[in-house]
Image (cartoon, rainbow over all chains, first blue to last red; front, side, top):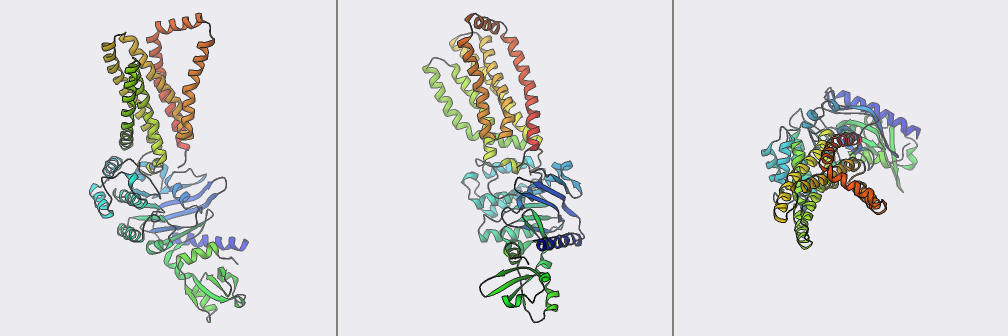
Length: 309
Length: 213
């Protein structure tokens, strides 16, 4: 357990390096965030979304992803820490900051009695930069019926409506909490394309949480992994994938490997699978062993379900 | 703020059909009982409950969680509901005056006294709402509704007990004072309702600022 904690601390240091290495100012910066609940505590953690980057937030149910997003949005009061948007405290410039945010939550958001044109009128009153043409474009692209009430929409259609609204007021920063979870694979792919299109502007940024790590692997520049309220790692996605690998080895040979090189181990009846932390260094140390590529999902699963040595 | 009000108006529109159906029923009941004031009181009761209905819709759809990510402050969220309550009260006050004038012209009666009694009902209802709204914010609409019913029911029960057990002489004196001073009492009631609105708003805002979504 102590060793695991040590490893987590190492990863946190890497997380700090990851953010600093970007050489870009963070559009969202959260410092020393702590939120305590009866049986759960988020943090203390530092978290930042670099300008022009897509940050994917992964973790199990109850890991604190939504809590982190809510803390960033001021929907919950943090016990400690500050949240700033481009260097200024969000609380000081609340309305101006929110004009530049597009937010998508999982599940129902709009009053169910409303129809799409009514939501358009409402949003026109709410946002100074509301773009009706853009909204109509997305409504058409997503095939949202204008004559039906929101209550008649499927879960996926409701999500599409939220996304259409989030993308139609020239937001610079999108925050999506499990936005892809209610969508079919085709729509998920379509959404990822739309998000990539949104990121064509170098001033745009996205923070997206999802259980579907494959989606994040497609679009994220950075992956932040939360576990039990702690930020286990926050790394550049390419580096994360490059540095981690999976070693398949017999139980007998496992003892030959230095424990410091292994993040965690998963055993089955015949062999062991180990998540290796620094593949390059490992390969130089053990040239006879072959390390396979690990996906983000593999890495997360090893952190969550693997046995830490 | 305009967007929040517009959203509430759309929500109210969803309840209008129910209001019309109940009003038609009350109209028939009023005619049957030869008591046309039921129509006006029913309309007042239904319209003021629309604020609570809007809050219930917000809660059901988790609208506040989303609205607070839009360019609104918590202050705007609370103020919009108080504005809605004020707007409905003023609108209903005007409508009641018109209705009452028509009823007095058709059925006869003292226009001044009946108008004062209608306005008194609005003031009482408004004060009940002003006490209830902080509870609705604190406890949520479902649980806050019971507090609201309690605020309505407890004074009615107290009045019924008083009417049953107080000596007739005292009751008659009280009735005489009310009849003589009805306009003074109405003025004091309106002043109390205005002050109550401000106080209630401050308390609700303090609660709402601590609320998590």
